[in-house]
Image 1 (tube, one colour):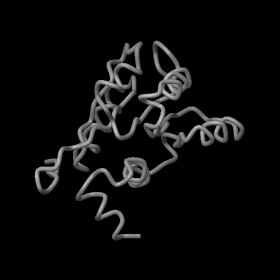
Image 2 (cartoon, one colour):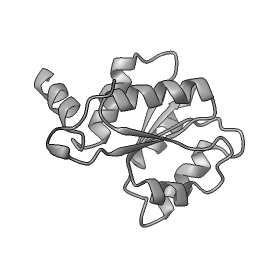
Image 3 (spheres, helix red, strand yellow):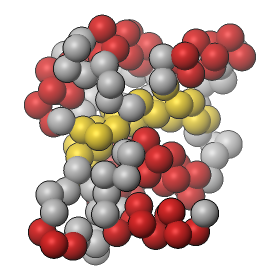
Image 4 (cartoon, helix red, strand yellow):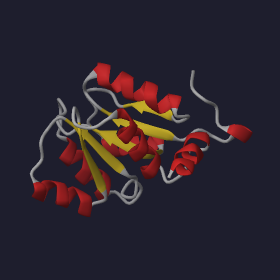
Length: 146
């Protein structure tokens, strides 16, 4: 059962852009267990900017290999829009990127994690770090461990 933020603080949303329903559901479960609201993008999403504006996420988790459009194209659209350009993005993909591609993402403030080579605890840590301490209970617990 998800932990409720204390003092009736509003839960912060994390947008999940993933075309594998099973992995998207797993991420939603983990995110909600951490005290956030998991917002799953429709598999056929075309307008990522409007979806991000409407859901107002503190972080976006995104696959690169999507059915309709590529994650890189979505990143470009999000970073070009004044309302969404500062939302942290974490790439969670099975695709191996070249060093140059990883550096280009980092320069845009995008974190790259490779599915199958990263533990769930590291994914949670990156979510908390990118959310900038916006979550209450889990963020405090994470910071106390450091």
